[in-house]
Length: 426
Ligand code: SAM
Image (tube, rainbow, N blue to C red; front, side, top):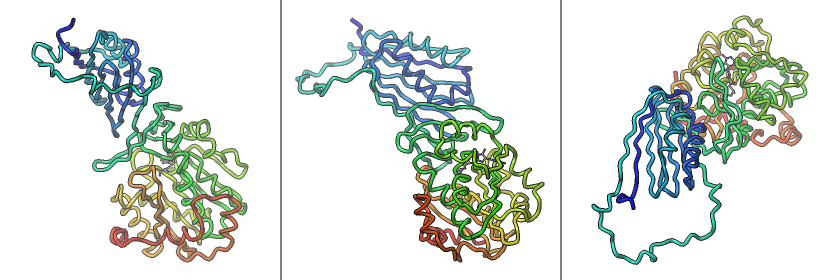
């Protein structure tokens, strides 16, 4: 009989594949399989992905636990294989070494809880033994794989099934489709939540309909970005539109959403849509002057390919490409998350369109950090969303089955809290 209660193997896996070290779903799958290969009974797995990188997690087994923390930037994983009973955790070690493509490693094995050093309390163990309430199928265990979108000080975490439906590193970003328990399937770009099945309508109705009703007669609309397709889907609900041009830089985003988010990417084959895979910044540079009624910038956060979508030059080109009474709408970040980008974008729009012609619409998206998000406007003529005169909004809302936008929400979204007014003061 072992004279120790547990056996602990502390492992340093080095020179591992950094991409695997940053892949929460893959690591969760490998750690669970490592336990099962050693005939352990898995009770629960809880794994967190930290953006920008790193994974932490534990697989609780009847025989104790397997734990891991990774540093992808070093290709390093610290792994604890703690077992009791006669489970051979070296089988798990061998499996993980292969799975992580570890080129070098060190491992220390130590006995934990030497019974010689411990004194057994003589209490009635039956009082402590919790009767297993019902038979539990060892095949099923709760998986808590968490996807976390965060900046230095705040985060939004979504529990997802661990299932990865699409995972491609494109020339611009990592494109993934995963499934969250609460918000269904979702698109993540470089570990940032872009859109989810359960709350996408908040964003896509509010980026499109306020401008369409403010303009009242938009025929030619340009969308920059919007690779998930939700924005063009909403725009094409307006029968008066003659042409929508969409310029998305990353064909992998379109492909992923067509395949796995068809209800969002529903209008990609619409006859009025001219879908281009191109850089929106370059497209605007050569766009014909005064050619669009509305320009919508449905871009991601100001990093990577979307950084230039927050520049003075880009918005000056947008201004020039708009017709005299044109309207610009831009994904505006949040006054509570990326505050600096939020304020700087508005100052840029004020400097190009005029102080009173850069209104901000605030709305809620539960799966964006803080849930409070914005669209920022540039009004070239006098069609101002705060002076909405459109008729027939409620009939349109009814007919098209809109779930977020209506006339009240339109007007309310341009009501600006005082702290935001202060932020926007130039
Ligand atoms: N709702 C999201 C948000 O608030 O962050 C945006 C969704 S949409 C998926 C963002 C799209 O902008 C992505 O598909 C990305 O590839 C695209 N994009 C980023 N930079 C771009 C650029 N320079 N030109 C065209 N599309 C761009």
